[in-house]
Image: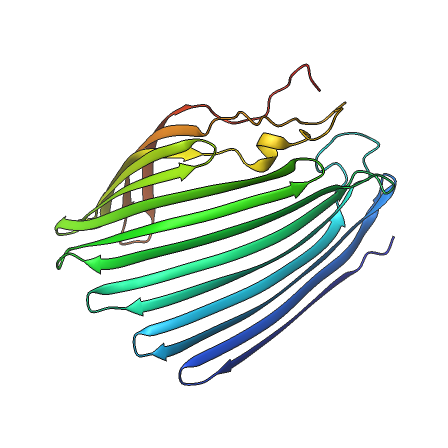
Length: 302
C-alpha cells in the first residue's frame, strides 16, 4: 500500500513602532495502513492570529484567536472490541485577551479567554456518534508589586464557567472561582522563600483552602530545595457523566456524578550539585498523603 504524508504551513508578521500583527496556518495530513475494516488516516489543521499594541506609555493590549479542526482514525482508542472501526472529529476555537497596566509600584494584569469545542466519535460508520459540545470561559485579574528590595507579592482573583451539551454525558454547567496571594522573600543571600495561600470555591465541592511553601538555597554549586503544600483535583465531565445519559450500557465506562474532589498533602526535598566540569548530581525524596482518589474501577454494572 502506498502511504502519503502532506504538510504545509504559512506565517506572516506586520510590525510598527507600537503594534505587531501575526498570522499563521498549518496543515498535516496522511493516509495510513489498512486496518481491520478501515483505513488509518489523519487530517490536522490549525490557524491563529495575534495582535498587540501599546495604546499608552504604560498600557499594552494583546489579543489572540485560534482554531483547530481535525479528523482521524480512532480504532481501539477507547475499546478493545474487534467490531471497533472508530473515527473521530474534533473542532475547536478559542481566543484570549490581555491588558497590562504598569503602575508606579507594580503591574496590573487582566486576562479573559473563551474556548469552544465539538467532539464527535463514531464507533462504526453507521452508528450514531457521541456528540459532545463544550465551552469554557475564564477570567483573571492580578496585581504584582514589591514590598522592599528583597520581597514582593502577587494577589489575584479568578472566575471560570464551563459547560457541556452531550447526547452521551447530558447537559451540565459549572461555576468556579478563586482568590490567591503569593509572597516571595530573600531573607538571606541566595535563600529564596515562596509562600502562597489560595481559596477555591466550586459548585460541586464547595470551598477548599490550598496553602503551599517553597524554599530554595543555592550558596554555590550546591542547591538545596524543599516544598510542601496541599493540592486537589475535581472530576471532569467524563469522570462524572460518561455514558450516564444512556438508558442501557452493555459495555464501556460509566461516570459517577457523586464524586468528591481528590485531595492530597505533598512534601518534597532534594539537593542538586553542578560541577565545574559540567556533570550534575541530583537527588529527591517525595511523600504524598491523599484521599478520595479518582480512578476507573471494574464493577458489575458493565
